[in-house]
Image (tube, rainbow over all chains, first blue to last red; front, side):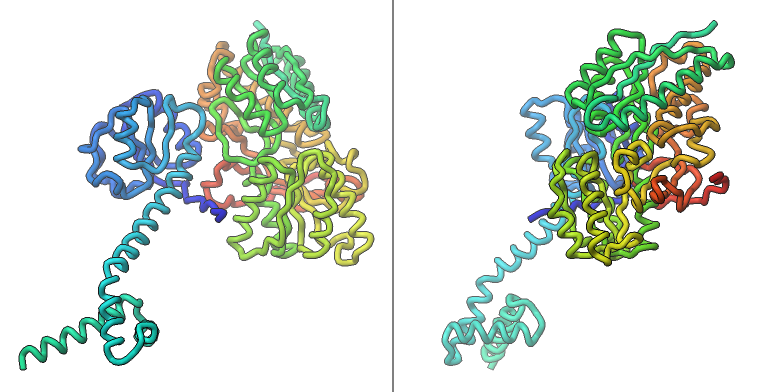
Length: 199
Length: 366
């Protein structure tokens, strides 16, 4: 499927650069300003206000996980790697840490604008995929419940297919997901059983 | 003591887009003559000229040749974005700077380049604004198959989406191809309110001829309806296009007869097109910056543009783009007639600064 790139609002967006003062930072800042972003440089600690950043640039040559108050792969904004050394160990660290785009050092005359676009698109995709995976995982976990619900309905003299259709009908009538409907049926039977146990 | 300064000139005055190259070169020549004849400016420019002949692979070697074989550090040149991108690595390696005086599609701000003609917020966006208001929101997009057409049409699509415009079609033609029958058939079928045309050279000429034939045969397309738009058509090509140019609406910083021309022209307006005017302005602006201090020719472009004079003459040290007036003009009886003119606005190459407030230009002398 062809993806239409959504151009993010970059004018006035806030970029944080975690890198010691260096010519690469000067070149990076020049490009950020030309595009129209606000920027701030920090080293070695991120500022307390990092949560308000729109983009983060990190120096893969010197970065380590203790610098970041989040788990690897869970950066809360688009993150762009500045890569100098291509030693496999550093690339391994980068892969584990997880970034959304990269720029090779030395930073030259261009490359920042496309990195910003790619990072934003990759970040948005990462967030939406995480949500989707979460939903699918939850539904997968409810497979057993669905089987139980169909078995309960089938026990009342229906075929499996009919029971399945009935469950679908109930989900639609209750305006809940298939899995949620199954959960209600199983729960209601469980409650009934509990009630009987007390008798 | 008068300083003698070599100045690179790199335009294709032969080859497929020689009309534009010649217009730009003429602007450079006029400015060099003007500077060299002006006793109040203590410098003399010596042009170091090369003609890549429209061959894309000749640009970088010829640019390097200028920078290596002379003392030139500034080059006025390039007509296409493709050639500009080809020479930037040479400029970086050899410490040169390019003054690029033709319209382009934006999304660049090289530390080595001054962008002296219009970018989309100075041509395309005001043109679309005018045409959406005047003709309607059902549009057709076409262009030659390369970055200029692709990017300009992408911006048009995005701009149109914000006001619920309908893009009825989008079709590209290989550079140099005059096979545009399918394009015309499609336009005749979907009947758009206007056509955004980013075709170049022979493709554009063939397209305009075919549109003229369509207008004669189909009353839906009678003259005055479904205009064809352009963001780079100037007087430089009018003679070559001939009568088929009639009715085309173009946007640019200046059209013949307008006064004043560009801020960098310093009051002069005896130019044949905005290509010529922007090339003239480039040399004049460079001369002004170099004359501010005796060793200014040793400064990098970044240092030169950091001088207070740069912002004063309208070059942004942040984006290297030049503030330019905006004119929307229509070809009537073989000449561009301005429909709307606006005071200079800053170039916004990445379109990140929000919609520009266009102030009407007050001084128009017909």
